[in-house]
Image (tube, rainbow, N blue to C red; front, side):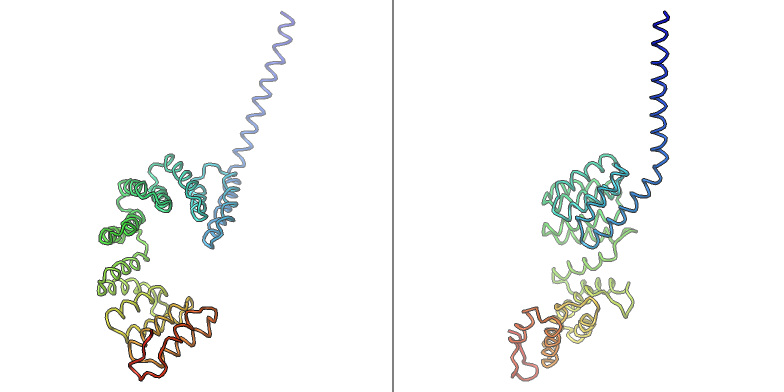
Length: 302
């Protein structure tokens, strides 16, 4: 009995020591959790900034480090899927988002992201199925209806797209940019008056001295289609002076000026654009195509 007792006591002590050691390790891990979460959150925020600037590779590196701190953080995982999608790795994005959606069946935002990933991958039937699940989960979630509109538009069903976009616009969390998309669809259908109403509603959210650049371009296009060349010139002139101005605004303004029988100003507009963007060959080509000797009101762009 003595040998047995001598053997049993050290074994029990060893097991107790191991248990205590494991408990201490678990305690140390739990003690570090707030620090790890804070570090993960900082890395995720940095990754979101990198992704917004188009640096998907940097975003993925930052998110990998974030997930080392918090392996099951759905926010970091969803952002990693978005970065994968940006870099053309749609299969990885779908796999990641599918895992998150399975773990979080009530997260409508994840379902919408997964639907968009399927759409980017060209798998429209899976995208439709996913977005239908999202609209059933939360019928008042604007991004779900907006994606349904995008899917309908991709299928050349502009009427269904408008129906879905209007459903999205009626939701509390609707994206203000949605009105711009609605105006584009109306304009593509040749319904310029409806398009103008939508774009004016969209521009009303901005200060009068700082309208949206894309909105100005579209508004100019709509006004030209409606034959309101003078108003088109006013809006497109604002576009050319906008901080985000591109050669397109000068080209559209020049066209509106020609239609408004202001040939000299049309030429000057293109010349100014050519001076600003000498590397854009289209500007020189358009200038060369304008008839310099035609009388006012008859200048054409060939």
